[in-house]
Image 1 (cartoon, rainbow, N blue to C red):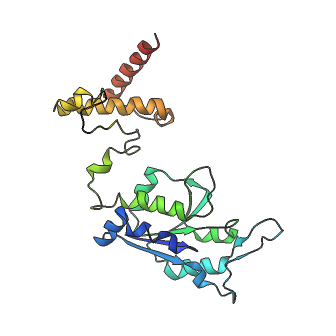
Image 2 (cartoon, rainbow, N blue to C red; image 1 turned 90 degrees about the horizontal axis):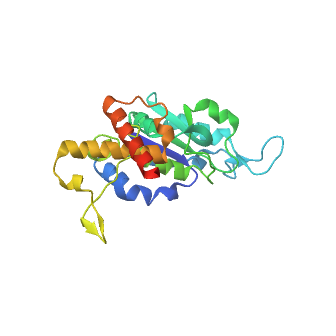
Length: 244
């Protein structure tokens, strides 16, 4: 897989691509990662990539020419161009899996007051991290890159992300490690039992319980298995007893 980030500030990615999971994926030739400064494509003699908004208003707007010429230069039939903008579809784990299947992912980072509207006509989709505004798209590009590459085969063990929050529509169950007793707070006995089926069932129940408490919206349209329905019944009964 290849990931290309189109940005005015490629230096922001120097530490990012030389540490942690991204560096490991690059070193093992599992992905190719590049940052391209689309300022280098401008035909303006002063190297401008932005101009004042037509109709007036504050700030500056990114111009069509440098960005679209940059996209045209690196785009191939297998590329998917993603514009990072607060107006886009919210990025979620399902989308991360979709992106991980692409041969070439191009992430377009904006700045200033945003993009000339005509640039939107040349991208495949628009994506947002959530209902807030960042100074630019670079931080969003790093988040998406991190979420995507960890799903690529052999970057990390599959078992390391199969039980992650959102992978199965639930939040992850509680995790523990040594010491077994820390200032009176003990690891649940079931996790020390060595009984794999009991541990699996306990973890599923805790995932359901945690999701119900913290993100009930994730359960609103969930198709529960027979086992999950029984566990949800137990959870509700426990909640009633706690309130008595």
